[in-house]
Image (cartoon, rainbow, N blue to C red; front, side, top):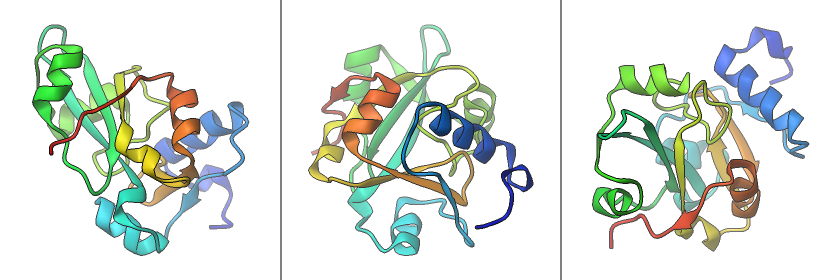
Length: 163
């Protein structure tokens, strides 16, 4: 965790630079183990799974844009609710996610994308004062509040989950 930034993967470096440019008070952490799922991240960080801001990418059918839904780790995204807000969407495979965001699945951050996605924030994240998001790599995470997430991404907060 104390190694220089240039020893870290490019995605982690990109998120670190973006957070620094925004004046974010919490530098990303590089974990010893991968946190590819919300449950793994919660276990590694000692927080509830709902505090993990997981990034779900969809492919918008009309223009092939990436649609990023940042949702609470204990919720499932309702694809129909997302489509009602941004137009018809489909699943995004690993190749699409990497090409559009610059990140691999399991490390998609809510910012510093190679191509800015259409972004939606799940209102369920606002149940928590502190949340954790991926920092550009499956080993990278950073802490923030839902309000900071909203300010960083300038994305609308919406009801996008099942149930």
